[in-house]
Image (tube, rainbow, N blue to C red; front, side, top):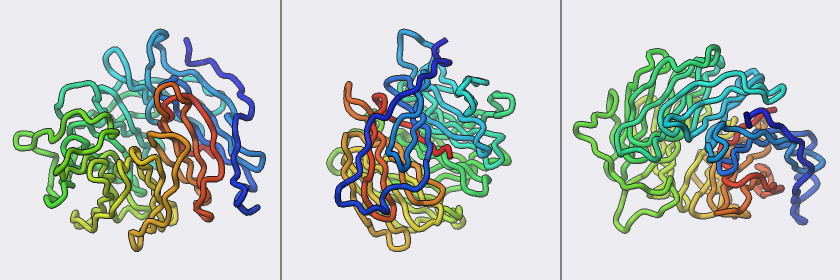
Length: 379
């Protein structure tokens, strides 16, 4: 079985800009896990005083003649396990539970079609996984709820067409995901495991509604859009949301409008529109700093990362990246660094880029396997 292979990898690449001050270099090591979707690889990356390197790599997936496509990853709150969604299955996808101690697989669960992003409850007992259904029909898909203790799917909640960007609020009471093909944000109550509200994020048609989406009156608004990589057609005001990110205190939810290149803020209490923040082309994934003051956005079509001041909505900086097709972002718990994945094109390696959030500069880059996608902070 390929998934138990583990190898050590030497220092690959480090880049500290000559203009950076000595404060740019970290005074301790930061470790994070990165998935390479086009190579079936899991990389443990170390960034610290000695630079950045791949600490070790793990092969994942169990189809030896095909790419399984690991897409989403989340670390358990106690840092003992990590969970990886395997997008391609026969026909359904899966989520795998790994031990951080030795990268051994300790459990699996079967999910829906093309599971993508996932998040974990604050107590570590449940996963919430969106079944993106990339290669299926334009029909409503689901969110799978998985017990981490038994690795069994305990619920599959119907939401919308191509849900993506699964995130829980800080309190663990609500789960949010974006409906890429229906221009909606959907909220799930984690206690009842039901879709309780949805919000239409189409420009000029914004509206908060109770209950799950009604697909007798709602249709898919788009054709296949290359998972956020294709620009909208002229005159198209659709949001094409690819991510939902609660604020640090859970009072707001930020939605990445990949199509209209905006970030929509919704008040989670009143379920009303707060504002639309202009963004760069193809804004894709979002991450809020732990202090709640900044928002980091990856721009899939713009080959850049943007950092926003949330109080004003002002873009503080736009940082061009080494390669094209931006994907994920995670912020270290001390809010000092943001780590970004870039997929690359064709046979190019994927890239991890490190942003110093005080200096507002990219201070290190690292090549990993092609199709760098899911990323999460370990310790």
